[in-house]
Length: 135
Image (cartoon, rainbow, N blue to C red; front, top):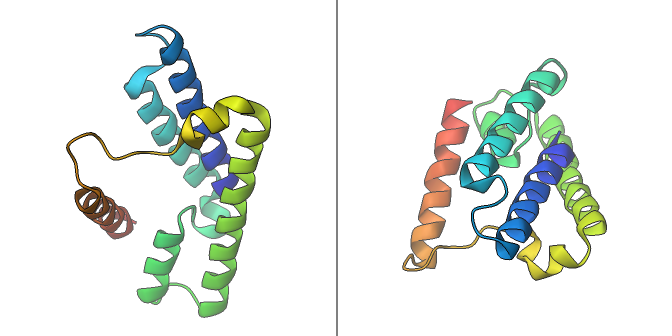
């Protein structure tokens, strides 16, 4: 599930960035990227819910471990599988997108102009807390 999530997410961001760099206001836009992320998570959690409980994010897996919902062995195996899936998903996008992957930063997020790295880190921590708390 993590492989598919990373693949779809990065491919959507790279596709949008490459389309909008050629002509403004083309491609799926920010809303389309957000829908790609949300819809992919929705489908993957639904599909894997009966197998692993829908674990896609290592932070969620760790949070469930801390909450005593998972054993140490299962937690470690899930996190290793999630990290390997993410690496493979990014590798697939890099293999398919080629030069676009390198020139567009691999589809990685960046901190917006006027926002400090500390504020960006704080937002990521708060967002991860909300995700783990929700699960």
